[in-house]
Image 1: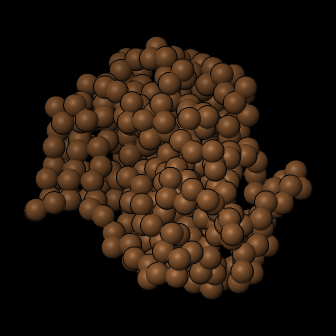
Image 2: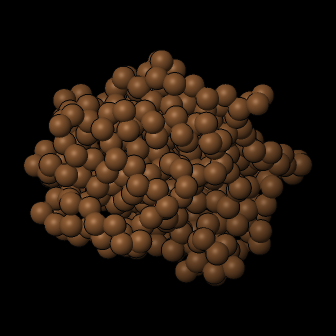
Length: 367
């Protein structure tokens, strides 16, 4: 009998990858991919796309789902999942419009919720106006403060300096170095120096608790530093989109950070017919597109094994690696192999900074 496999969330490398893989592995199954937006976003493009329209990224970085499935057993549904009706033999998901979609196997890939210009609208027709507003704010501002010095805040700062080298840019970050202690000091210090070489101010070990509206103001940090600013941008990192999971399956399904608790085989502890991948799960690793891709490969294989009664494979993690751009021409890379390899501008430029991996993202979506 045909099985219904439902995937909630369609990020590139995450839910989209699971859906594409399972549709080719289980030709008799019905695959339903649900996402609030009618497109997937090539995430590395967001800082550049939000800062300026000079790269035409809007035309290539928002990728529809019409070419994702190579077989007719896959369907895309635009909608917001509000709840899950779960039982040991299957269940259904309930959308905001009341539609119920049954499943035999469910995959949760809800991703994360961002603040500020990184969180795009669900309605694709609203994206041009959203981008125009963000770009106008960046263009008008002369003193810009990014609250959070992870990869996203650092990349926004570099993009600003590419377009307007004269603007005053500050990053306020709570840790002792940019990003976090997953990465070695040499990498974090190298990234800081590359940003400072472009005139970007980096304030470490401090926080901004309140994000004021755009306009001339001063920002007071938790430690009492006062920074002149006419635009303060939150880049503090995302939070998991898991409210509907707690509402439906109970708070015990989540950890203290509201991440979905999974077993080594990436199943929910009390629901073996529910799998989860991506940013929202509680694997001990950095949250990145590449990690979601590794999760998806395991989950696609495990769904086939689960339905055929074969043993499932555990997810064993993947190496830590990252490339943080500093505009189109530079950045820093880190590969967590051997002794840990830190690489500079030439590597970042070759791998990511110039093209932002758009071609790779489009290829994963069937384009």
